[in-house]
Image (cartoon, rainbow, N blue to C red; front, side, top):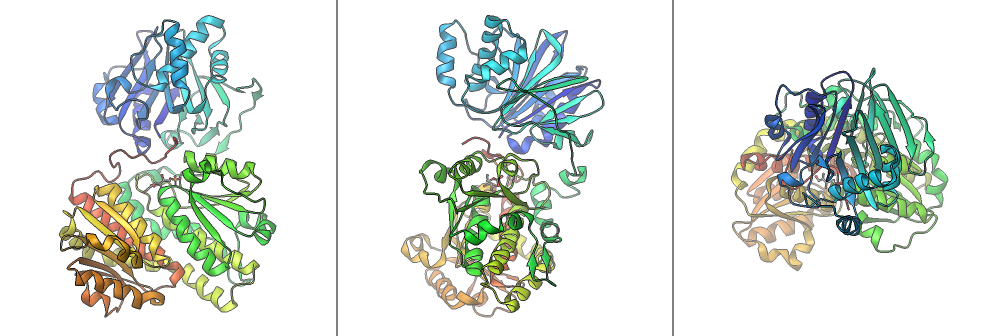
Length: 612
Ligand code: F6R
C-alpha cells in the first residue's frame, strides 16, 4: 500500500513524479504529495485526495531535477492534509516518503518527545524522519550512515526515500518488506514502488532487496546493507510494455482486464501443455517433483481473491490428483502457530507478490522446513523472490483494484498443477488427461464467447438490481468459491452487501434473509450437482426471492423458474470457474458503474496490501 516515486537527473522531475504517482494510485489514493527543491530549499506540496488534486496545487513554473512523491493509503492517522506524505523532520532539514508501517513508532516517539521533538502529524512516518534527524545531528554521520544506524532501531515493514536540505544532489532510499525498484537511465535514476512510473523512460531496473540502502545521485549509485556490506547492483531488463499498463480504449482498467482474460489465459498456458507426451511443463513443479511425490498434503495461503483462487484450487487438486489440500487465510495461518511438516508444500497465491500477510506466512512455512511455492503475477516481486520454486501467471499488469484476470490466471495454473500432480501420482487416465487438456487449450474461445454474449444481457439485468441493499451468491462444489468471489466483487466495487454461501448451507441460516427484495445469484452450470441446486433454486422461489441463475446453454429447468438467467457455454466441471466468474464480474461492474462508483479505485481499498 502507498506508492512512492523519486527522480534524480537532468529533466524537470515534477511532471515525471506526478505522472508516476498516477500510475501508482492503485496502491492508495487517500492523499498525495511531492517534495522538491525550490529556492534552494526543500519544498513540500501535499493534499488529501487524488494525485489530480495535488497537480492543481503545484505551481506550473516550479522545476526541480530531484523530486520524490507519495500516494497514500492511510494506516496511522486519518486521510487529511497534515498526514499526507512527504513529511518534514521537525527542523525541516530532512524530508521523507514512506510505504509501510513502523511498528515500534510509539516508543520511538516517546523517546523523541522527551528529547524535545514536536510532531505535526499523527503518522509513524514523521517519527522515523525525526529519529533520522536526531541521530544525524547527534552522531555527525553521513546521511546514508545515519539512515543505516536508524533502521537498526526500527521494527516494521518499510520502503523510504529521504532528501536533505544540505545535499540537493542526493536521494537516500531503503527497503525492508515493502517493494522498491530503481530505474536506470542515462545520468538519471527513477525510483518507484513498481516499474510502471518509469517504463516510458527506461527498461533497466534494479530491485532492492530487504535490508538494503542506496545512495543515489545523478551519476552515481551505491548500495549497502543495513549491516554495512557493499552490494553491487544487479541490473535487470524489464519485458513489460507500456501499452500493458494503459487503458487501451476501455473506460476503466477493470473492464479492460475483464476483457483481457482470454488472452491472459492463453499467455499463462502457452508452452505448458504437451499433449504428445502427456506432460505438463511447469518449471517450478518439475524442479520440485520429488517434493510433490513425497508430499502428504498441500497448504495454500493467500488473501482476498487470491485466497478464493486457492479455494478453487483445493477442489481441482483434490478432485484430480487426490492429494489433500488445506486453504488458509495467510493472516490466520501466520499467527496461529500452524503445524507444518517438512514434507508439506505451501503454495502462496498472490497477484502482486507483495501482500504482507502472504509473504510472512511463506517465511514462516520456509523456516519450518516446508517447500514454498509461489503463484504470482509480478516478476521480481517479494514473494517470487522468497519462494523455493514457483510458477508465474502471465496475466499482465493488473491495475484495477478489484482483481479479475489474476483470478482466472491463478485458476488456470491450479489446473496445470493438478494435472501434473495427478500424472505423477497415477491418478488420472490418459483419456481424462486428454479431455481436460483439450478443453483447457481452447477455453479462451469459450471465455471470449461468454464475454461477447453476456455483454448486453448482463447490463439489462444489472439495471434491475442496481438498487439492491443485499445480495446472496450460491454455488456447489467448485462453484462455491466462485460464488464467494462473485460476492466479493459486488461488495468491493458497488458497496452492496453480498454474501457467498455453499447452496445447501442456505437452509442453515441465510434463507431467513430471502424476500422479494433480495436477489440471489445461483451458479447452476454443472451437471454433477444440478438436481440439488435446482432444489435450492426452488426453495428461493418458494419464498418470493429474486433469482438470477448462471446456467449452461440450453438449460430448461432452472432458467424457467429464475427471474433472470445468463447462459454460458458448457465446459468441464474443473474448468467451469474460468467461465462462470465472467458474468459475475460483469454483473458487479455494471451495477457499480450504474451506482456511480469508481470501479478502478473503490473507497478504502488499495491494490497491493503491504501492511498486515
Ligand atoms: C479483491 C482483491 C484483493 C486481493 C488481495 C490479495 O478484488 O483484489 O482481495 O486479491 O488483496 O492480493 P494479492 O493477490 O496481490 O496477494
